[in-house]
Length: 496
Image (tube, rainbow, N blue to C red):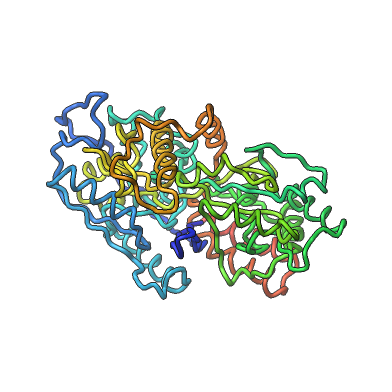
């Protein structure tokens, strides 16, 4: 389920539009199996994709559904390091009025599917979920990047969070390379947790049934304000609040199976429909995020209990805030499915279609976007000579970058305060770490639990969204009938 983010204010309010669609297949094309030319010089351990020693040349077109400023910046930095390379970033949906609207998205996806199947796609695609991993494998419209990884002596899989990469694998093949990922965390209202006799420690996992038990206990004790909604600011509504976490329990896009007609899913539908909320599925999803949002959640519950939970999209920008959890909040916690699955999303994941004119150059750019960086940079504020900022606030897929960029971002936000400017004499090497000992070791342990990529669902959302809307918004389907329709229609699509 693709989730695109539009910055709406300085308080870091994101509009998240969850849209996924169905795919198609054809015979397998020949896969480009050698990532680098045979006479390509080998690199030393000190050589990074940011090195200016590589004489790269050529022109590539990168296609994205929506405009991402970080993609533009990354492309510009790659061009600066390689003057003979030209990267043209094209945007599929340019009108702000069409942002998140179903019809323009569907038109774009249909056109893109046709182009990919006919071999007329872009050189690099910022993957919008046009295919699932299995459908990429069956259709032959994209290169298997795992072959490139294995053939490249400069790419070492152990340097990356393999669980993040494996979320896009199917039978050992990998057609999608995530350049970043986003970690969602929960904070709970401590008063309501205490009233329910629930005690949680930082980074514990919780599932939707545990959260609903806390709400019901608080309701029975008369502890809720009259305008109470389960989630702070009523961001997602009952149809979306826990869906991403529970979805892995009932659909396996790699195996092509689903179990929506199970008693567990029917119970999930009944449980979530009762959630106190004023938001409908047709209204979409709004996700509040940023360093100030936790304080807003805390203050809103000081006199009356207006909400139980805050759902926050954690990024490198807000890591420092984790050391200052308000007294009336519990967290951060990780939302998991009842089976223990933990999901993540990405804003930049790349596919190289077989229509790519320069596969070797495309691979060099992909490596540039993910590989360990010797000296990190911070947006446009802090750029030591030769350094780049490939993460733009998102969690990097290279383990080394999580520590180096995390430390830099923490120090930058420490000196910026609310000014969003870094002093000219900013020297992170002379500063103490703003994080407690063991912080990044703990964070790496948390990251290792992520197994399911929401972005790998392909276009299945085109099927389940109208059915769920009937159930949650119009009340014209029973839970049993909703589950039956999902099982029938998604099951057929998975086998196409």
